Length: 313
Ligand SMILES: C[S@@+](CC[C@H](N)C(=O)[O-])C[C@H]1O[C@@H](n2cnc3c(N)ncnc32)[C@H](O)[C@@H]1O
Image (cartoon, rainbow, N blue to C red; front, side, top):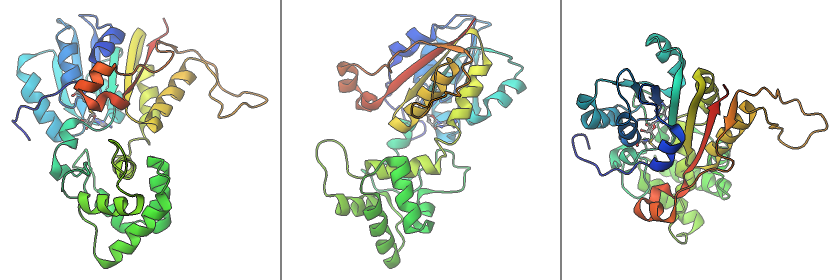
């Protein structure tokens, strides 16, 4: 894929720009550079000394985005880092506070559309799914190593898959015969359990989501990363987050509510113990979603939910 010009439509771009309110001399972070669509638009609004720090932990995405953006901008710094390391990264760059930050979570079209990366059930490829190729565990490792019960829990927890137990049983029965090494093999096993599915949603969607989340620890570090970004915003600075599934969106919603001093008790308790310290103002009462026209032009936008906050002055 590297070097090939990939057509790329950043999700909810107008809404991101409206909510970030880029100040031309401000300091911004794009935590999830991907193919650089959002970064390109942010950069076009910056003037020296304004700068953009863009992170991604996928080397291939960094190379693709650098080809697109790198040489044209001296106020852009692209780094091979996880956004979980943002405080350390900014400390190293001697940046004490941010005017704004974007997190466009999840998987990129570059990753999804590349069969060797193993993210897609539609194309034959190894069951890999690592966004950061430096990490050790692949989806094939999990499918080969976890017990039937652990697999069922994983499919249920990370994929909200109703047929989790039956799929786990089918995986274990099948791997006794030979290892399950490819995306299409796994998709076929799920399809045999659940049937061919109806409409545009493939029956293996949730199982693939569950594995991808686990391989990349996508949920584990999100809460602390969001809290860290909020504490790094200067007064009036803004954080915009786009989530692509309900598990992620729930974490974003709860971190924002808590930071806005609202109650996040799981169910109404007699005595609420939420700290009620107001660090931010919520800018999106409900999550912003894509218009019908955007979804027609870019079907990936269908499940996007955008939320934003502003640091209290
Ligand atoms: C939806 S894509 C971003 C697309 C991008 N906004 C654009 O316009 O091209 C998400 C990107 O986030 C990256 N990513 C996911 N988790 C990450 C993490 N913890 N740290 C850094 N990058 C991460 C993925 O590798 C992927 O490239």
